[in-house]
Length: 378
Image (tube, rainbow, N blue to C red):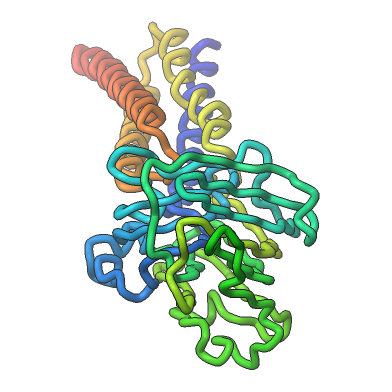
């Protein structure tokens, strides 16, 4: 009876291992998810040579280009929280040599059919971002405030981009539009309008060449909706538009715009064909697949079976191969919000499972030797 139970446990383990492997193999996702960045910079989108195709930072996107700037990001990963960042002679939202330049919302997240009226203001070193629910900018939903360590200067370009230079893959989707852009700056203690558009006057997708488009299929002036439409996916290209203001902004300015999300498909975050969360996949499939061989081995100690030993070895090899593949993926793909601690924990867990898979193989070989020894003696 014990021998039958042991074999059943091994077959269940083998089945779960195969299912786990299939789901894991179909779960490879690009490191970045779909996103849209909106802000101001001292550099236009076309002058960054290091992020062009074939250059060192192509896959990282134009955020790696050295620049001064302020940018708001909406994305389908990082639990979909909005983030605001600044830079001074550094990457897009990397702050400067002394300070981190990014801060996330605590409550509001990017969602389908969401509309926010967003206000970004800079008063010397104080950077504030406010999310309103009404076009009058009176119903405040959340605000962010940060004291910058240094001053982003010479801001003259309105930039909207998704910078998805990662190889094309399943990184979620994000589409919507930006409208009613207003920029004011403080001159002689008065807020003076510098730029405004509601896109009503535009007759083509560049608004008569006011906007410089890189990929008009992804980000463009939509004359049907009188707005700037965007559609972001991880497509292996850099998609952006920019507009040059008539003058560089002063140290105190205000930018307002309407931001709407039509469609949002979350980053799969390691989900495969079964659509299981990676942690749930480990519990439902991975954990039983590892435990059952040891239980089966324990209750069949006196069993002499070549098939039992072979199945044990196969299970161990499959788990071993899966762990090695997982380690390779983790080293190749780095999610933007994945902390060093999380990476270390995942690596340690993989190494632990690696040791367990080797032990399963050893036990299978040991059982095979016992069988072969008795076969030889007979």
